[in-house]
Length: 171
Image (tube, rainbow, N blue to C red; front, side, top):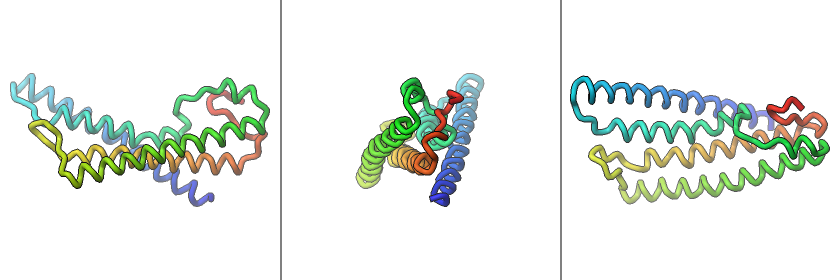
């Protein structure tokens, strides 16, 4: 189990770097687009769409990294009021529910990627990139997020109830 947790944490770290790189690339493309439009009076064909796809992709691929850091928004009032055993049970139930929902989202994301690839769907713009490429961020992001949540679940199962810490609360 420890090897799984270490591996998933490493993968989450890696896709976090990729997501951050995608944001930097999107900013660079935006700067290039501004330069082309306003200083050279040229037209831009692909830049806006590429920036949108990069930002959405970065958001989805960044999900497991943010979970690794326990950076997602959570409501900790109820868990703080619960006794340790009930707090641990609530965390386990929350992880299981989230993994189940993410499994469904991952499945439907892969289905969308497959359909768009097989049918040759492209964007309805002048640039017209194949849509399976930006759609790929959905199943990858949600799937890796689910794997990170499983790693967090395994850590929770290994931790005694008295040692469970509510992230960000100091308790």
